[in-house]
Length: 276
Image (tube, rainbow, N blue to C red; front, side):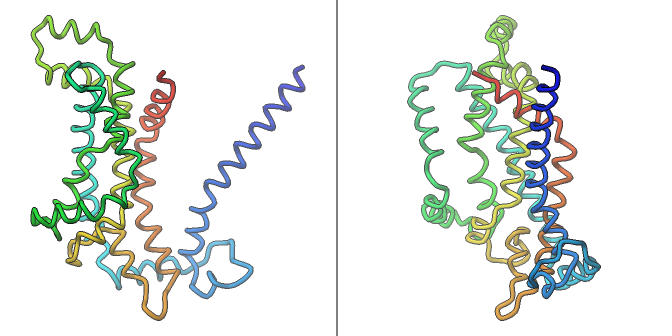
């Protein structure tokens, strides 16, 4: 029986290690391509070891685009959007979870239905709307439409239903707390794992967004990182090694962010996964 148990544990560990290897390989392959030349990338069989051209490729990226300005633009948009999403989605999710009001269920169903609509279908009406407001080619077009998300509200609502006891809210009401104070002083500290997950999730999505900034931003000095990296594509000739180096540079901040908040991120995912 003991041998069978060790045998099964060995199989499980092998499958897990295989999954880790498959997950890590694309990032490893990105580093390999960023350290070689375009001719080595295109050769067959492909090179699987690191080259010595990383600093050359990075220098080419910095010489062809204003990389650090694009990083600053993207960081500003990502941070402001993430903070807005955390505030508005947590407030709305808390309201849906713990308060009764007319049309609550119907409104929540309508919210869920919006999650089934592909984002691309809303591009034209969204662009026409921001054009009427005069927000084209401004950061408002990137930030304001993204300050709340149906997924974020749904996520916080599900988490809040189980994590914030009704008895705690009743005690706060007896102490004279307003609705906002109940949210700010009672619910918000309890929602920290869910907020951490939602914040990182939102930050990564905004950081990697390409299509919406491409549509709404015209001035090169306001380009976000993904749009700026697209400028590295040549019309007749493309330096793929330089593009891979730029992609690696754009990915590193996300990896650092995940490493810093990985414990809180996994705690949010784990606690959200066990909610009934």
